[in-house]
Length: 223
Image (cartoon, rainbow, N blue to C red):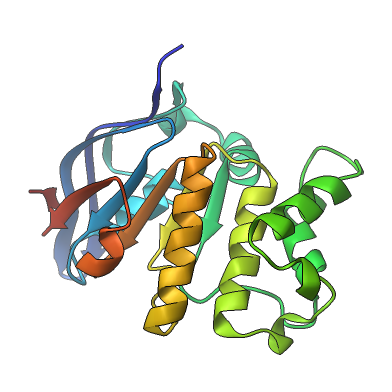
């Protein structure tokens, strides 16, 4: 079996902003191996978020090829893309994206509620994910009762609970103070050490330094 999890070939993406067409990604090639922790670094407007949306099957490129674990995602149906997002990709956002009226367990449970797997008992997987991020003692706390770092840990637990092939992190420390951000980045390193494949976008070289490999994206192209 190939160790390549992500294989992008000649990926390009443009947006029409009347009367202009803005080229955001330009013929990108990228390979991410299973078990890698890769940081994509670049300034605002460099195309980092667009790249992450394509990797997360939230957007489609104009041209090129995207293989996820050998499966061509660019000829997948909307249903197949939804399945990939639900079962194979975990998302961690800068703004946490938790539902404040739910407690930690209920927030981590959300991907399973929208899953097509039926009404299986996922409690063990949810509790294990919460334990992995060190929130077992906060499991019944509403998200508004958590600190910023705890909210991001809950978001990471939600991402890893489905045992995804790929974790995508979009500026995951952007809303955290420096010390809390370092805790989150060390958590990513721990998860990576347990076998998780992580692609993280950031504009901060200090954040990128926690990854195994750093790629620079500038004006839509890799340097």
